[in-house]
Every structure is written in structure tokens, then in C-alpha cells.
Picture 1 (cartoon, one colour):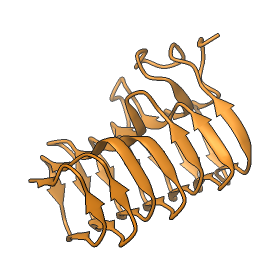
Picture 2 (cartoon, rainbow, N blue to C red; picture 1 turned 90 degrees about the horizontal axis):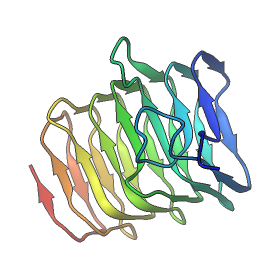
Picture 3 (tube, rainbow, N blue to C red; picture 1 turned 60 degrees about the vertical axis):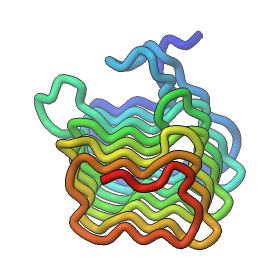
Length: 182
């Protein structure tokens, strides 16, 4: 009924979230960001990885955010996507939040929309698969500590847009349709 997210965390999860197969569909009115469909919503702490395995589909993005900016939401691990994320705005959304690991889009993975960072990713963003609309955007307040890597067979339909800080290289071996804007 679009009234809530599929998995919402407002406390602490120790061990992570692993979507191994099937389809997980999130709603649009379960978060402060009511225009976005959200499958996995973290407003507090996940001590572990978020994995979307090959054969799994999220209808709605992964949101790591505290919209009230009272404290940072935290994922103390990686976000690994080998399956599919169908999102209307951003497939991975990190705002007033911290990801201590990497965002890793595996070879057969598909994101229908891009990756947005407004706060901090301590690791790197690595793309081996396909990222369609919105590309990768690092907001003016955002930091990506270990850079962005676009592997040889990867495809990003839109631009890599950096307005913030990327502390290591942007390495492109694959296709970036909209170029790199720094």
C-alpha cells in the first residue's frame, strides 16, 4: 500500500542485512523523504553489510539517513549489490549518514538510478555493473575517502558529479555517458 518501507531500522542491527533472492518492495510514505520508494531504510546503526545478492530485486532504494540531522545514521560495513535495484530517484542514498565500508556494484548488477552521497563514505565506490539514471553524485558536503573506480565492463549512463571531496582517484576503465564533472 506504499505506506512503509520493507525493512526499516531505527535502532541497532548487529550482523547486517542479506537479501538473497526474491523481490523486496518498499513504499514511499514510510520515511521523511516521501517522494522516494524505499526498500531498506536505516536511520540508526547497522553493524554489518547490506547485500543484494544476484537473483534478488529491490523495488525501492537503500537509504542510509537521519533526516533530522540529530546524529548520523551508520552502516559499519559495505553495501554490495549483485542483483537489481529499481528506484525512482536514487538507488543508494547516503544523507546525514556514514558508510564505513565500500559501495560495490558487482558485474551483473543493475541500478535503475544512481548513487547519492551527502555525508561520508569511508571506503570507495566501485562499479562493475550498470548504473542508469542520475549516475554518481557527491554533494558539496560529501566526502568519498577512497575514490571511485569504474571497471572495464561497467556502464554509467549519466555523469559522475563531484561537488564535495574525493580523497583518492576517480579511475575510469568503463563507460561514463555524462562525463566527469568536478
